[in-house]
Every structure is written in structure tokens, then in C-alpha cells.
Image 1 (cartoon, protein in one colour):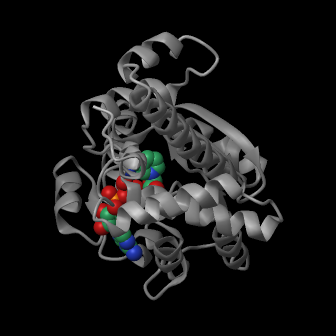
Image 2: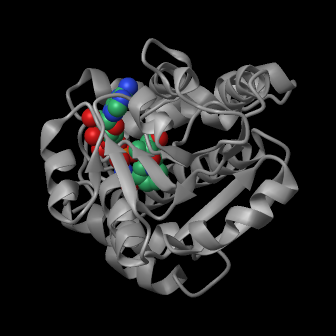
Length: 293
Ligand code: NAD
């Protein structure tokens, strides 16, 4: 049996290529023709719909934008559920609302189909290198069976708990990244307005307790004013929106997340939604009437 792969965007295409390199036979599907043709040139078979993928596979991977797209591909017209047989496994690697993961899994269970939610962190360069970090929820024995497959695309594959737990971990990651970027922007503006070089402050604190991977990756971009994504503000809005919905549902107040959501929304409304999320600094630049660079 072949392995299905649906969603060949910025992340999905290089991940699918790594599976082909590792010897998997893929059937692929995407709304866009170009990436499907590119994968076909590498030996993948093309399918016209998720249903067609499901008819030929016992394992199916999805890497789609958000909950509505995953629901549509899994449960919609010509969706996976119409072609899946009992025993088929769905591994959804998209970053979506954990509540949606649980809803999809509940529908699939009615046909004896089991599901993992397995979102990633790392971005396009790590998708290309096969060094993504996977956070996985779902039945433990299914995780144990498919950890090896995920390891072909990632260097870290961590089991987080029941279905939805992978996306809870991913949303936690996205909250911490957003708050870090905001804190860094706020602090560098204090430095600039106080007449101390932001570059010097960065180098002075980078190795101390305030240092972080986010600081190392994003401050050079902020200092250069280079906001080429990377990870777009609009995608981070999508994740924080899911975090706020999941937080409300679980009874976990997220005041910092809500505040940063409004900063990102302000930048989206001003036309910066396609810039890297480090462009959050623009919000502080507007408030202070001063640029960091
Ligand atoms: P993308 O927009 O580049 O790719 C999504 C792909 O899905 C597109 O090719 C689109 O044509 C296809 N698609 C959408 N709806 C479809 C449907 N119903 N049926 C078939 N194909 C459909 O997105 P991406 O950057 O690859 O991100 C995918 C997921 O990974 C998102 O949840 C994102 O948040 C997450 N993620 C992205 C990054 C990043 O740096 N880009 C990093 C980590 C996680």
C-alpha cells in the first residue's frame, strides 16, 4: 500500500520529498497543480481528491493551513472519509485547533479509522533538512508504529498525550514565540529611546538568562529591518486565534496572547500580514515614533 500526502505547500512539499528520498511510495494531492506535478516528476502518483488518495492508501498524511481545510479534506465532499477503510491511519501534521483535531478523530472513529495530530515547529529550512520537531497526540500504540515515519521528516518526535495534545503543545510553542518577539521589541525600543545601541544591548544580554532561540533568530532581522518571511504574521494570527479558542474552552486565561493578537491584528490591518512575525517591532516603532535600525 502507498502512503498518501495531502497539502504540498511551503512545508508539505519538502516533507513529502524527504519521504520519497527515504523510499516511501506516495500518492499526492493539492488544490494547486504545480507542486503536484513537481512531486509526480519525482515518482509520486497524482490523485484528484482526498477520496482518491484514501482509496489507495492505508496511511495518509495531511499538511494543510488550518482547521477548516483539514475538516474539508477529511470529512467533506470527496473527502478522505469517503475512501478510507477500517484500519486506515490519518496523521494530520497541520497546526490547527486541538478541538478540531478531537472532532475529526471522533468522526473517523465511527469508521474504525484512528488519527494522530502531529504538528511541527521549525519552518521551511528544517522541513527541507528533515530536522523538524514533531509534537504528537493520539493513541500511543499508533504513535509507536509511526514514530519511524515521522523521523524521516524530523529530528525530534515527542509523544504529548491523547488526540489534540500535539496541537496544544504547538499552540504553547506559538504563544512563547510571540511573547518573546514582543518582549524583545519592547526592550530594544527602550534601549533606542534611551540612547543605547539596540545592537549592543542584544550582544550584552544574548548569553544571559534573557537569551533565547527566538532572540538569536529574530533580533538580527529586527536590527536590519529585514522582514522577509520566515513565518508570516497572518499565520501567527491563525495560531493565536486557535490558542485563544482552545484557552477559552479549557478555562485557561491567555492575557498576553490576547494582547499580542491585537498588535498582530493592527499590523495586518496596516498591510503587513505577509511580513515575518519579527515585524511585530513595527507596532512599537509606531507607538514610540522611532525606528530600531
Ligand atoms: P501553505 O499555505 O504554503 O500550504 C498549504 C497547501 O495546502 C497549499 O499548497 C494549498 O494549495 C493546499 N490546500 C489547501 N486547502 C486544501 C484542500 N482542501 N485540499 C488540498 N490541498 C489544499 O502552508 P504551509 O506554510 O505549508 O503550512 C502548513 C501548516 O504547517 C500550517 O498549519 C502552518 O501553520 C504549519 N506550519 C508552517 C510553518 C511555516 O514556517 N510555514 C512552520 C511550522 C508549521
